[in-house]
Length: 276
Image (cartoon, rainbow, N blue to C red; front, side):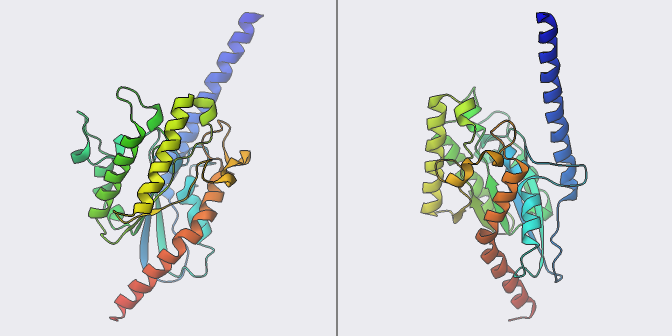
């Protein structure tokens, strides 16, 4: 009987793991169908959401033709805004299980094998012209080993990534940096690791407040800074990644943050087109 129960548990684990990677494949495939706001006007603008699992949309509902994560949900919310009159393309450039080290520009990395994610991003013209970039990155740093990534290194890496984004492509772009989600930390991390993530978020907030690189504060999605993020239904079954409800909430919270920026850019492009 014990052997049968062990077999059942093994099958359940294999099924859960297989289902997760099947869903992950859907998310990557659906990035080919990233949403474009159906709004009036022929002027085009670009937003890029880059980072790790939380930028990618792990935990969200996805099909082969419907996108997932913040990029998909934000497109739907902004399409309802009557003040947004021009066309905005929102791209999902999240990458599963990536750390801040993986997103460094090769010139800023100390690793023997240089990271290539940011280089690949810069090689695509549609990302280079982005006017708004949302960075959701850093949640996997605490899990990295050999070598480990300290909170100070995490924030230094984020600074270097934001600086590389600033000096490449559209020099007038806005960069919004989010805090690191901490839901599930009490389940998956040690007390020391939990304290490190708290330090990471404090350093991120201090960096955005300093504004030396022109980086703007994004959403605070950690439990210590935002009590609204403590709702259980905002998270997937693992308690760590956001659920479809969680991504929808974030998208709604982002609208008042980016709407003034978007309206300002639309008006500037319109004036420029008129030669004013």
